[in-house]
Length: 500
Ligand SMILES: *Cc1c(COP(=O)(O)O)cnc(C)c1O
Ligand SMILES: [Zn+2]
Image (cartoon, rainbow, N blue to C red; front, side, top):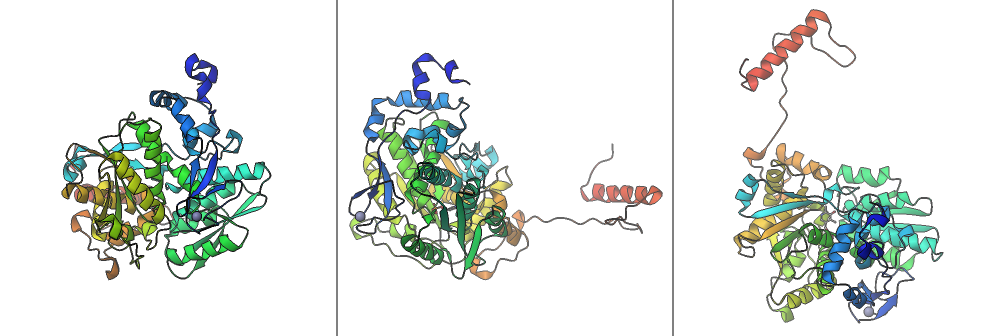
């Protein structure tokens, strides 16, 4: 729809006007720093940062109902810069001019309600939000769209030139970073650091295909992260991990979309997501809080973070009920099918601690919960979901297993509605499905495939047929007819088909 076709009273706000005044705010000392420079940690105390709009209060001059109308009308607007995460421009990056926005089709991923069979099995109403339907097939694109739009803005305003973007990755960050950086080639190049043999072949293929420099080092993700931290502190590179607060801003869109897709009525909702480096948890908490403060939503939904027993530092931290006694201890991770969340020392832990406390305080009761699940349950629930029309990755399976556990523990009630984050597309992690179906999980995963969920191809070669087709050697005439008819007969027998 064209701008002049929108109702007169809302037209002036369809294109964003609020410019905001963004600063990095330190979670350690509370210090504020200008955003003219890329900062990842506080120069004074070394803590992680979040981006704060000093003029956020201005957003309250518009009523919540009016914001809702603005976003709902923006759905119809044909302006590429506002088609993705920047539909919520005023909340995500008000200082980014529309000319600087990088839009590759991210965001607004579908909410798919589980069929009645699956809802019965789980014991409540729930939806999958398919973040695997983002351009690089994971939610990381939301954060990259924001980080790269900011870098493009810095390039266009002459504040930086010849950027080398760098990240450590469990696979999906590098796929997203390489994709978005390649769109801005030749002004920006990218290099990604991966733990050798700890990402799936699909995830390795993605940055290679986008033309990034791919570096593998020994160890696990936490080791890669330390190396890129040193690089970003001492060399002229742009860090694209979620330590970069611009990533968090973009990933807030996930919360805004849920609010909009449920008509801004989220009081009875629970958002369930896997936790790795905890950037996504940070963003979702922050997103719902910002919409709440601006009056766009009237209640805060429950948030449930899920971790595998094999990589559970956040879950362990919150096991201690007394906030004063909690102490964060990194864990040594064990192999996990939720490989993108196989992180023992999450970079965003201080952000999570800060936001969880605020969230529960503002909600007036505990609304954020942490759940631990078994590797076995992750695989069983992923496969069960996908046998019912979903495209969940292992982390989607992890979230679903978390929903089941939360229901059993009474965190969720029968009348709640859950939204499960399937953070990536199933095909990125098809190797784990293959290991399950072929019953060849190494023992350290602690997974025994359920025979009822195993699937395998059936090879049918017709008996009594001498000539069979081969590549480059097709059959002709009678031989071909015989082959086709005999094969059809055998398949009909195998499938128990009735003759018509
Ligand atoms: C990155 C990632 C996670 C973990 O998200 P964090 O923000 O690191 O907690 C989970 N699932 C998938 C598919 C991912 O790519
Ligand atoms: Zn500080």
